[in-house]
Length: 342
Ligand SMILES: [Fe+2]
Ligand SMILES: [Fe+2]
Image 1: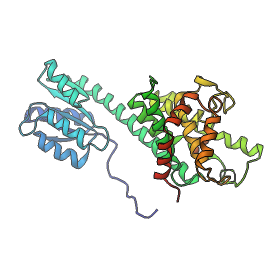
Image 2: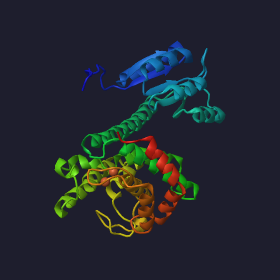
Image 3: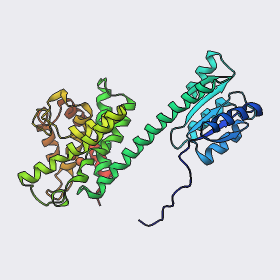
C-alpha cells in the first residue's frame, strides 16, 4: 500500500443525466427523477450532455433525439465511444416511428420511450436498468477477486494471464472448427473467467501451496478442496442472481480438475458431462504447469510438454481440445514467451 485511498463522498443514489432541449420538459423530468430519489444532471443539447458525461460518467442517461448542436443519435454514438463502463441509455422522444426506434437501438440505446412519459413506466424501467448495472458491477468485482489468488499462489508471475490467453486461443480454434456452443461473446467471457480458476486456493494453507516436492496423500486431499471451496461460493452467487456469467465462472472453478476419462476430481465427471469451459481451462492450466517452473518441478522442454499433452488425449483431456492445441502449439509458445516469469 503506498497511495492513500480517500473514501468518496457520493451517496448511494444513482446519478442520471438528462439531455433535453425543451426547458419545460427538462424540468418535469428533473422533478420526477428527484422525487424518485435520483441525483439529476441536465443538459440542453448533445454537446453539453457529452461534456458532462465525459467528466462524470453517470451510469444512466435519458436523452431526447431531436436537439440542436448534437442530436440524440450522435450523443448515443459518442457515449458508447467514451464510456468507461456500461451506460444505460434510455431514449425519450416524440418520434414514435419504428425506423427511429431501430436506428437509436442499433446505435446503442438500451431502451426507448415515447413522449409524454408515464411516471410509473419511467420508474419501473429505471429500476430495471439499475438492476442490470448492479449485476455488471458485481461481475467486475468477481474478476478483481481473481487477483487475490495471485498474492497467495506459488504460481507467481503471469500464470493467470497465460491461462487466459491459452483458453481464448483454444476456444477460438474450436469455434472455427464448428463448436457451436462457442461464439464471440462466450469466448470473451471465457477469457475473463478463466482467471478465476484457482480462486479457492485462498483458503489453502501456505505450507501446502508452497511445499517444495510432492504432497502427501493427506496434503493432496486438502489441496483438492480448492475447487469445492471456490465453486461453492460461485454456485451460491449463481443460485441467487442466476446470471450466465456466474454459471460459467462456477463451472470453470469447480470442474477444471475433472478429467475426460472420469478420473479427475471433485466428482469424477466424464467426457461431455464436464462443461466445455472447464475442459478448455483444464488443458490451458496443465500446459502452463508443464511449461513453467513450479516449487515442486522444473519447467519441461517443449518436446516433453507436447508428448504429455498428446498422450493424455482422451484420458486427461478432451480429444477435440487436444487437436485444437496441436493446431496452435506454436502460438502457445509465443504466449509463453510473451508472459515470462521473472
Ligand atoms: Fe486448480
Ligand atoms: Fe492454475
